[in-house]
Image 1 (cartoon, helix red, strand yellow):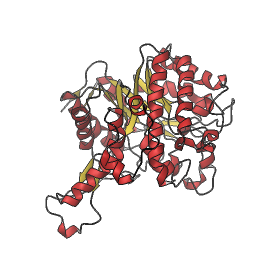
Image 2 (cartoon, one colour):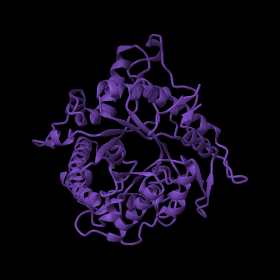
Image 3 (cartoon, helix red, strand yellow):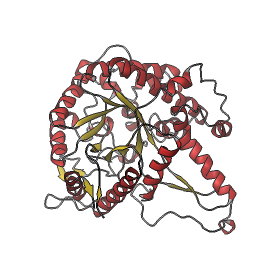
Image 4 (cartoon, one colour):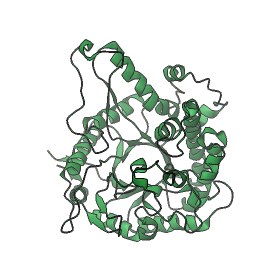
Length: 445
């Protein structure tokens, strides 16, 4: 079977600033919450930090050349808020903006579409010191920052993403404390999520005020929730988890407000929701960025396995090094559900990839058949949705480079290009060679 995509489909790769840039104290960059968090003992595996990461701040020309060799037509990267506004608001660090200015010019010269994300988790620490995303003022600070970046790059950049994965920011950063800023405050979760969504709406308005023909979206990580059986308790639990992870963000963006089932479960009084907020959050988007890594098979803790009627659903046999099930059909199911239930104008798979225990480079090559199989399966699933009418504009592999994988430090490798973190040597993996061929042929087989 050969799955061919239409002309104009975006074949691309994705990264984020803190995970690859390094140079955390150079050229006027301010401290971010991830700088503070990663330097706090015990927070990141192995004591790793993003101080150097992939040294992309200095090696960006080399990395753009890798993209040219791959043949990608789109590159999603993020802009580091503290590199542009070291204090979160106020004085602009021109040297920080200059870096992204040069990067955008190089991408365009290479025929690669720039897809900047304005927030990929590196909040200026000074704003966190003032309350962070639990405070409404942070959403307005984000809109100010967005306007500054859009004013500088908007003459060349048409396509924008506002916030990356607000669920992760909320749950892992403020509720569970395993990501920066490391707060364990479940009661602030709804406020954090609301302010992130408000920031998205305000930023969308700010971009469009500056960039006349801008196309703006938000990036959500979405997990299909599959009940473990037809037992009513399993079905109800899967529905609740879908509300809390997926619909809590999708519904407000689509103009439906927060799902009442989730509001009641969280006992949220909605005190943070002011008149006009929901309308701002529902400012129409041009596309939805979809990050897909796994499905979740959900079983109610109140049901004994012997009580579950057939057919029972269990996770498949293959898991990534992140302990995430490899389940390509979930991407098809997700895209179809989004198109049927929400009818957003367009979709882009903004992240899809896998961490596996790669061998060391040998003879200028890294053999990674598991990643090739992962990408092939998910691309075929995406193509199936596209062939059935889902307006899918593109597919971006996570990630171009092995990088700093948040709380796992450098112990998890998602890249299709291997990075030696001692000397920064880049080595092609077989998955990169495979992806280059797919791009050249415009088809997956």
